[in-house]
Length: 372
Image 1 (cartoon, helix red, strand yellow):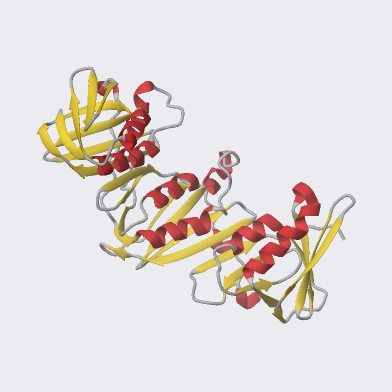
Image 2 (cartoon, helix red, strand yellow; image 1 turned 180 degrees about the vertical axis):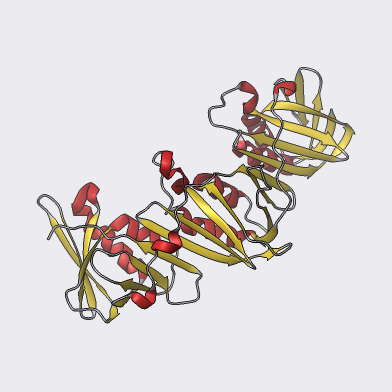
């Protein structure tokens, strides 16, 4: 194999593809990036059994071929080269990387031992990549931590993506929080599809494919692989089967609420965090309605805290009190930039959180018992 390629494009592609190399590969070949040169194009692929990333860039191909190179080493080398054309020349054992005034010789890994890369399914439809990335960010914090998402609750470590008509819905929950975000998309043909992908995996994919149009492929029957692609980059990701609860059945309805309170979400979150400092690890705060404001209080073994935030409420008795985990409250409020309405029921029932503007985001938060 012998090719010439632009340094910036090469460094960017190797850095991106190396994200899909396992931190601690179970076999040495999985520490490599697969380079495939043909037809004046270079494809660079990384794989960790759950996800594979493939970047394609233009190259002047003198002779084609494919090789397996230590991935993070190649990324480090290409990042240090000057802004110029880079020559990649491979023989049976080594890859020589040459740029003006620079030459590196890297050992090759046995490409014959590299597993076959999974094929991403054909695109089911297309969404705006930046909006999809924002939606993933909005709901990801509500997913259960990977270390806790095992056994019967494994599905709660994921984000459910559901396509209905011309809308995508992303949802996540850890039993204490539910976050749901919708965005428009253009299906290639009418279809209702659902898939579940672990939250850290989807967050990484969305972050690195956040420009232009994003083609999304739902798994084909029996494949278990989803596809995400922009113009020159493609990720195939393994989906999870089952375990995601029917959040629509447990989410409270606004019309069934006793009343509501409206807040500036940033002020409410900041006040709850301030008060919870005295509660140490419990992060418990009590929110009590007092006319045109709420009192947010917390108590530890000795210290206590009390702070207030302005509100406008309707239908609720003065003195109505409910407890929350302050960190959970802050995370479900974070995606909302304008004022927020919190629909209230009883001190033991979950609350429904909605932005007052047209932001297509909803959240549910379970209350907690608090010390009086």
